[in-house]
Length: 412
Image 1 (cartoon, rainbow, N blue to C red):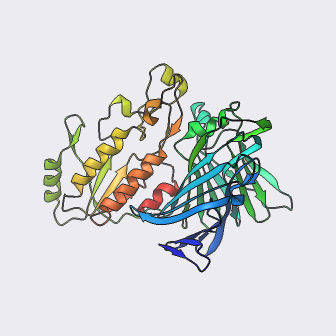
Image 2: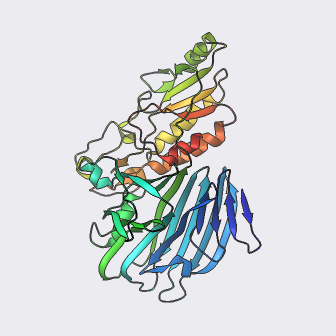
Image 3: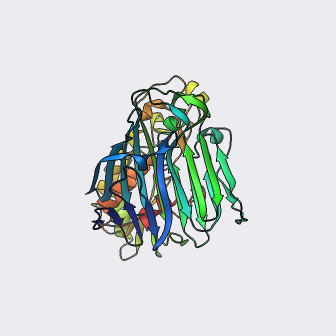
């Protein structure tokens, strides 16, 4: 739901949270409240320390589309090269997805700092979980959790990376988890506006009032003149206001059958299986990764050297368009099947890939991307298309699946 107050500020309101977009700002949101607590504030992007909150706003527009509340804004800095900021914020359940365009114009230089989506997290936090930068994962790094020390009267830095972590999940003492994630376009974040490699800076500072997460795709020690053009970045914020596990009712488990070596679903056999289990609480299990057979061009390339050698992994890359197209086709057919109560998805896990054709580009060394955005797109479509026909869950028993608030929120 979207409302406007007497000052025409935009409020996006759902069951237990609300976000504020001031009309004079072309970024934001300025604040996100969860359970009436002000938790996320001061979301901003900047060029040389000059933030988008200082822009002259040209337009702020709000609307609903495909089950999402959308706020669009654009403006420009009234000095220097008059660089432009444009942002689209899309809300769905507990997930905010942001597309940020920053158009560097007329000789705009970057004086040491260029930030996208820095923010403050109010309250007391006990730890944070890190999904490491892509390069670190290529070198064997896995997700890890780090404890946050108590405030002792002095600001300290509790985390620092030169490449963007794919996501960081901040764990509050009251049980609320906040996820801040980079989008699918990792190659843009890691390009550092064309400056030297590993010239980004991603810092977490412990302050008296909470945490500050500074996200700078470029932090250099000199004035730098990047190519004058539009730079686009995607990222997201998600929140989980409880620590309850996904609760699936007691049920009879039926795995969706396949035929032709995993090329298609055997719907005739599926209908027979459901008929034979009549009067039972039936839930269908759909193993997206292992159940279906996928061509090599749908698989991920785990590193730049692997791409150069023509190697693929056993994991899927959701950026390959064949995956969403095929799954939507199957789920449309499933929505016409009767006699079952819910669908439980297995194998939904985002990962990194270096195959440039997945993002419709060419590069002899490959281009790194994270396939979480097309997973968001598919789950959003599935929720809108099937939520009135059967219940949908992620399998809570998958040991390898990291519990991301951004994914689990689709099913609560």
